[in-house]
Image (cartoon, rainbow, N blue to C red; front, side, top):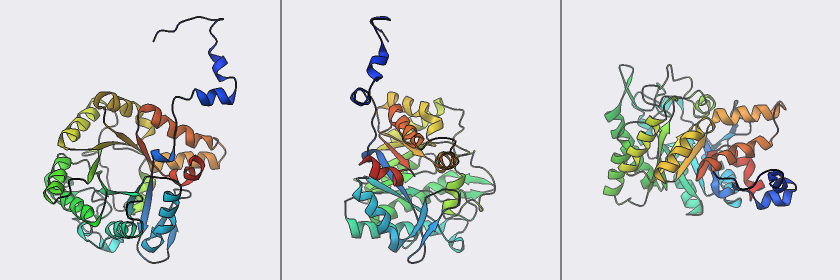
Length: 330
């Protein structure tokens, strides 16, 4: 970077002296168009249930989905992402409930599409951890997730969700080759306009704890997921994962978690020029919320955290703060 001029003729603080000039010179902005709202769904009727370690976030029974989706549409949020809290009795080793057309995700898709048509986009998670009795994202054999057997089920799960009316299929499982196989089965069934948002870079992170509580898989999972999720020390490997998923047909790629990996987001954007989303995960959300509650940090930290994603190159952010920021940013 070449800087012309020098002090005292050049005083960069002149461009910061008043709020109006700071607003004029803002390089990065955030709007509701940048937010994706995650929603947790549960069985039952007329239920809204708090989630212990995620302050302000709740689970909704299907008939109460309208209360939160109405808010999203009213405030201009373009898309919601659905995550199920599956009854333990419905879980098994193969995650069979994932292929039930009357499971929570499928019922949620139908409810939203029937009620709102295309007023808002629907993204659904493709993975088996909400449905398996062991809490892993695939078929577990000898304490190792079988890649190819898992991909077979993920393809069926993706097709089912797309047939129900899902707009964006989001495989978060980190199995090799699943994006290409999902693209093939969607195209074969005349669903070529359904998008694939690949969790191309999903790290084996310590920040997922509250989410696993939210979907009810925390007690099921007895060990870690390091043999399929990425090592958080590896940047070059992250770029390889993205490259492969783009070749297989991913329309958008995701980095998860978010804040600890802004360098990864920036590198992907520079290298591939593809839309990059980030997931500001449950652990990030809970840390910030607890810091605000205990008055360790100010609530402006929420906006600061989300602006950092945009500055790094994100096109959109999946964030639990969408609930709070929607009306403020509109």
